[in-house]
Length: 313
Image (tube, rainbow, N blue to C red; front, side, top):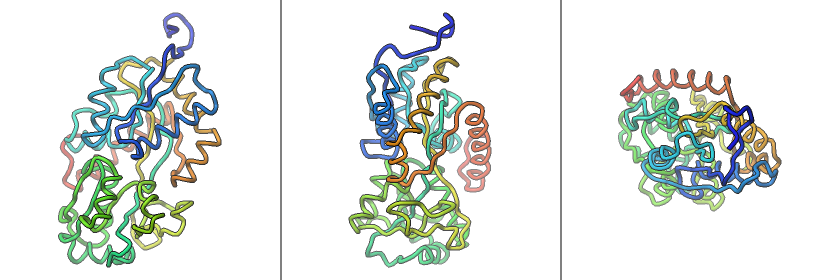
C-alpha cells in the first residue's frame, strides 16, 4: 500500500466503508448515503463503497464497536456530529473528537419543533406560552442524548419563556425517527429533531412544524415554517454532520479523504440532496475544521454548564 513513508500519496486498495450510527433513513444514515451516491456518480474512488449501519446507544455504538476496531485504517470512516463532544462533556461517553481523526464537516441540520397536526399547540407562540406557564407538563421527544444541540435548542426556548429548563418531561430516543413517531403516537407533545427528520410525516399531514432553529427560513417543504427568530425568540442553533476517521490516520490519509469529500459535495446529486433535505452547506477541512471544533467545544462547555449538564471540561 502506498503511504507517507514511501513518498507516495495514500490511496485505498480495497473497498471503503462509510459507517452511520443510525438505522437506514436516520439522520446520520441520510448523510452517509448521500455522500456515497455523490462519490459513486462522480467515480471518485477506484474501489467499491459500502454504507454500514450500526445504530444503538444514542449513535455511540458505531464508535465503540466498529470504528475503534480499525485504528489507522483509512478504508473506514464514520459520519459524525456534535454529539461526539456533547456526550463526552455530559458524561454520557468516555470519548470525544480528539480520540478520532476529524476529516470534514459537510452540512448543518437545523432543529425543527413539531407537533401532531391535531395538537392544541397551533403555533410557536402557543408552545412558548406552555413552556412559560406549565413547562413541567410538556412532554418532549428528543433524539440520541441530553445535552446535544436539540436539547440546547429546547433549553433556549424554555429560558426565553421564563420557565425552568430542568422541568419538562423529556423522552430520549436513539434516532430522530423514533422521536417523531412518539409524537405521532401521542406520547409526546412536541419533538425537537433535525429538520429533515420531520419531512415524511409533514408531507403526510400528520405533523405541523411550529418553529425552526435556523437563522432564516429553510427551503423546500419547510419554506413555510417560521424560524424562532421570526417569532421573537433567540434560538439559532444547528447540528453539523461530518466525516471522521479512526484514530491514527496519517496526514496523507486525511488529505485523501478531504479531497474526496470536497469533490463529492460539489456534485449535482449532493446539491439536490441539500435542497430536498433542507440541509445547509458547511464544508470545513484542515485548520478551519480544527479551529471550529475547538471553538464549538468551548461554547458547549459554557452552555452545558448553564444547563447543569456539564460533567467534564
